[in-house]
Amino acid sequence: MGGAADAGVSSSAGASGALLVAVLLVVLGVDPSILGTGGAYDPGQVEAAGGTDEDAFERCRTGADADADVECRVIGTVNSVQAFWEDELPRALDREWQPTQTVLYAGSTPSACGTASNSVGPFYCPSDRLVYVDADFFAVLTDRFGADDGALAQEYVVAHEYGHALQDQLGLLGRAQEDRQGADSGAVRVELMADCLAGVWAHHASEVTDEDTGVAFLEPLTREDVDSALSAAAAVGDDRIQEAATGRVDPESWTHGSAASRQRWFLDGYETGDLGRCDTFAVDSVSG
Image (cartoon, rainbow, N blue to C red; front, top):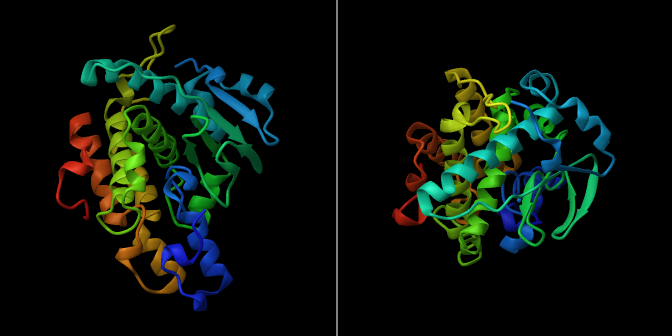
């Protein structure tokens, strides 16, 4: 994980400020090691670890279960996102989606990229090709960092991580290492592309159905749902994080993009539903 210096945080910020930045530097990102510093549900796509009871996943079978239980919501989102990319990727790019499991854990659990915990936040690990999520993180995102507690805010987190899995499958994830900091750096472009990919999924989410039942995983989204996702995107903007931790903003040290940029790229994906609009490396600037 990147330390305070990596975030452009001065030593005068104090322990609490450094912790804030350390936590959110990798929130909604690929695992930090790669950057040198993030219907009827099938629980089989999610592994339990770190104190999470896998038997409890049996309760996660319907949309109503996902509405009532955050772990079921993660499972439902994993099912929906993978079903979408399984259909969309061959159509759009003539590529096959490689199934990618999520490890849903409580507290901490080992990964091939180091220990997964809420001090790291949700991440995709390219070394074992797994997504790691602690459902308790969503309360942290709301209570400490001001994100909406709505369902799509949480689903956006999961969809973003699957955006990184898609980037890995397409050979794009490593571009984050070529240019690791700055408002228009490769690292930021990789993160904003994942935001856009999450938006593309959200655009089509109500059309994605369980292959066994024909029932859609999600109901049509409302403006309130979209605003919920945007609140999460803004909460993890580099400028918001830095200002909260230190009272100053340093774009030269950004690794994930500003709040406005994260919202802009999610919305671009959501409003168009077009995978082709997510090429953040094709524009001169990704800042918004």
